[in-house]
Length: 411
View 1 (tube, rainbow, N blue to C red):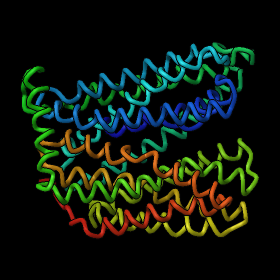
View 2 (tube, rainbow, N blue to C red):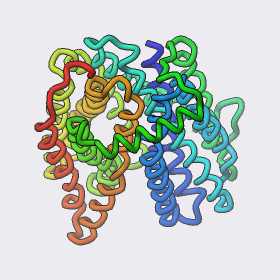
View 3 (cartoon, rainbow, N blue to C red):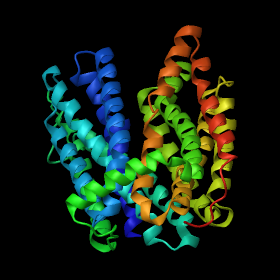
């Protein structure tokens, strides 16, 4: 349980900083104008994704050879905690732009790299027959944490909290939500740090771990065909996760443009989707252990493909809500089953390294979906056609996943 609570802790940064509040605050109130702010926000997210993609396998390889694994989670968690707290100092003025970008970039890198090592702990803290269940519970805790932290942020935004004021010129009621994320992350990460037993790598000292870890990483890349099943899975995941990422990146834009949904409505829709995704992750967790990660991934992709296709054909806001929440049910199981599948198929001695590649598969081409949506929308002058690229990503991921073997236990 202490392991799963970390998902709850980490989700506040994703929901409040990366997706909803800080992203909007920065583009609308800190940057010189909204157009420039949107471009700068895209740049810092893209650059952070590149850093994560490059460094995750490297840190993973070093951790596999070192004496401690949990130490890496602590380090990167507190990097994100400190960055979140420092966002309090970002006032609504363009002079704070560079500070904001550097600080939030460090936070994103910290949160994502911490999750690499957190994911790698799964097969160590769970028996093989329960990996799917614990992975699903972790994701459901994460969605629940996202919802809870968003409601807490809404309470802070009311300006009726003793340690804030309603002076809109310095936006203290908005800025107070950012250190709240840091405090939230710090408090709810403690159960993992205090009560979950650390798992060690090969027990080497720092210098030897770095040297041998990097050497092994190069050898793994050079002889990646030895892990062709894992490689095929990661390629499949790269496509369907890109589709999923693009879906979330443009879902609000699509809703506002075609269905006239206001910002508050979109926020409530996001909360509702987090709830449906959490329910899906929790309910399907039991199914994962019974039918295996591969089958659940395939079922989840189909569960995303059908409502996404229908979303491109409808003109009703009510239908959008129904299809959107239906779609959300399969988001959690897809992410959870992907993690449990990797935990089962990855060689025990290369767990962190393989979860580094797992992170790489979710970040290496993260820019591609949004870029194609923008290009197709521009060329065809149709947002529906632009968004349709999501279906292609999901379908390609599904077809490649069909060729991946079933993994019922870890090698």
